[in-house]
Length: 258
Image (cartoon, rainbow, N blue to C red; front, side, top):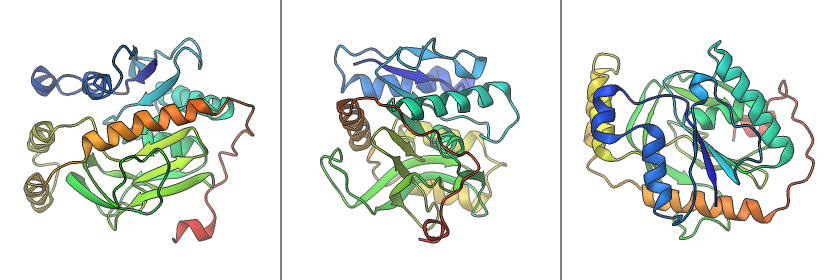
């Protein structure tokens, strides 16, 4: 299997020396589950898009310090590329920034949350069970680091996991798009050091709670396994022409308030 990593940012230099870059974290986690697989990296943040939507079997969009609404050429180009993947029914997984970009590209709304920073270990309720979620569990804890959130998901989205802090933590679109607000590629050491590096930007009480949350255990290995299973299931559905999304169409009032 060949999964292309669409790199949307670089880890701070001091932390990169110890923990690696975002693509290296993802490759380490996914590589253990895909012996013999290929994980090419495309530096989307530098304007490098893959030559074709079919260059890889599936794609993963990484996190980023940027907001999906930032007026940057590479973000606009990536958003258009995501729409192409949707139309062609190519498997795509978005992590944090990637999760938010997928939602925006398909007509949803993303903006800074009134709830503020999400940091540390976030506990979520699973609200929908899918065949690729093996083994299953009804709660999910993942490391997070974000201010932005999906505020209104696209009409095509199905809610999979949520919390009071992040109502749209995990979303699935059809058989081939999956968005996850959390970071299954992070380790607790990186989460801790990233929070400390942002001391002063993160309110002191939120920072303290985030650091304290690291006493818990993250379901990172479980979610990485789910991601691989999701891709395999998505590939089992032959790509066909899909109706192009109306990017101005937001979710229905019913789904906004569920």
